[in-house]
Image (cartoon, rainbow, N blue to C red; front, top):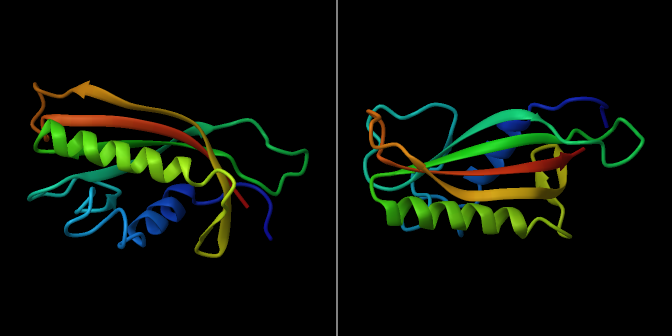
Length: 141
């Protein structure tokens, strides 16, 4: 396994979008999935934008584990849809504790220090009015 940093946003986004039986897709809390940019026509339902905002402290002395801090902005056309999506995302992260997840050719040992869901006042924006934030540290090797 390679040491150092990983393309964490790509890894986590791909993993989230694979959770079609529980989290993303039609009829799920986040129907439009996890994206890297705002969609031009978001349609109905919630979506997530992921951003790497830093790095948590090292989990172990070895440099084999990256610990990206990732912020998820959850958007939807209604407060209820945005809140339900944010809670579903936060609960998905909480489920990673003690159950490592395969994320492509990497493994995520845990998502820790989850903060949110936090409502953001987006009413003066041209984007969806309802936005929640959920931040977490991922431990990926």
